[in-house]
Image (cartoon, rainbow, N blue to C red):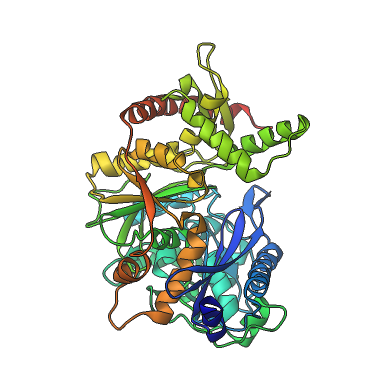
Length: 531
């Protein structure tokens, strides 16, 4: 009855996150407890050498997700959802969504997965003396300029996916500082785009004669807790096709999946960090000070509150691992055994614990696409072994779990070993950690530090953006985001911590030696496998 009353009275927060393979909606109360969940599964497409989602799929997916959540509320509580205390939208960071003055899309949406911006990223990194990754929005924009694409002269708005959906719901061209830091470098003192770099970029593009300046077409930057507008009548109708949802609901700044991951793991204060492992894998370490120099392997972004944060982002995570699990599922069905995906993943992940610490000499690369950390602009999927390798199911599963963390570990080694960054806790979240004690154990070995996984880890970024919406609706005067999370959300939550096992650490280091050496094979595969 208490939960039902919270829903009826609107003392709730709704978070919707557009992930790589799933759009998820989470409704929570102001204590952070999950009341209902909505889901829509989807996949990106590779069209004309671009990783993309069509606008039709984006719109349909958001509506389907909300419809799923609305139905769950009605079934569980007997309530038709008409209002909530606040709404937040998050999505995959980076990428390129381009609109003209009438709000029409004028170029294909390019996701974070694209690596077709090498020239632009290299030139901007040199110009700014600041690492500009290939997937950042400004790299996409400048590459379109370098390529002479006609649509650029008609630009009126460039944003991320979360900023676009937020605009559809509110009419406001704004973005959370965390997601903005995947568009353009952020000044952590002003919590805005870096002014000197904005000036440099404007001078760089001036000879092209465009009518716009960078700030004209980029969304305004906001920090967590600031009001980012309200749900309009049009936005409510877009989200809820039944017409039940009322307009006027406050909305928090739209955020990227990195920021919501930090929020969902209470990793928004200096000396905290988290690793999100799923379709892509990224590690976020909140810094006490800036790094000593520029690293192409490390992205400098921010928390939703604006603290500087170092990100080791691997484009490729568990996609190939998931494909192998699917193959084993086909085999099980062929043999007359019906099993659901959860059981299949659980048994195969757990079997990996019986493998050799170094995966028995096996090697794999799950490079569906290019990998920025290893400086490869294309990817090829590979599984390798020698005649002497110990080829069994446990080692096979173990090597695919290890390699899901391979690229991200290269970036973490720079932070931990070269920069001597101090971290007091590492939190894990995402599908990689769903099977208890497996992915968590391997991450502890990779970082050689204790890793904690909260009971809420499976809710992921959708829960994180719901918390940011709840923070907007229920924050106390002067209450910082890190204090809100520590004292009012995570105090009552439980989790499990696993310390690194010495043999696992040694085994992971041995595997990484092979991983680095084998990159030459991956490069050759890119050259040879052009069919």
